[in-house]
Length: 103
Image 1 (tube, rainbow, N blue to C red):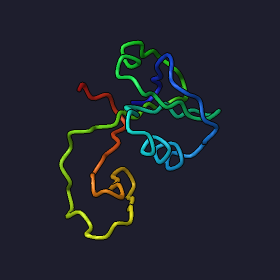
Image 2: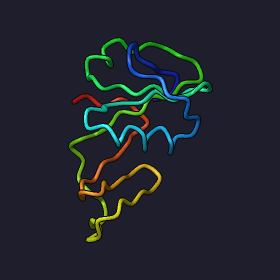
Image 3: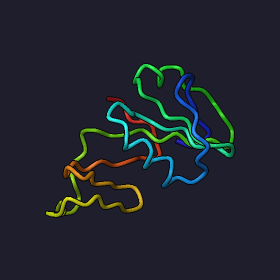
Image 4: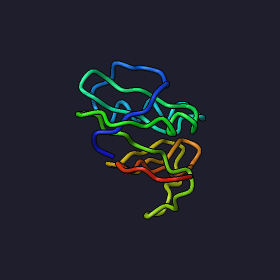
């Protein structure tokens, strides 16, 4: 969701979407990221999203833990990544959506 951020979270200096979302995927509890001109904030608690507010220049990505893969999962143990869809090394498919989704 454009121009949206939330309170709390952990700040990282990553400036690219791919670095920020990849960092989120390394933490089992990560539920969202806020990516802005100064870096990104990883949210590890769904409760953080209840404090969302208007933040010009920030884009919030919510991790959808319940999505179904749109393509077959790879049979290798290596993680693969596309623009907004990710497959972890354990074969779990995860998608980031640039809009708010309720859980």
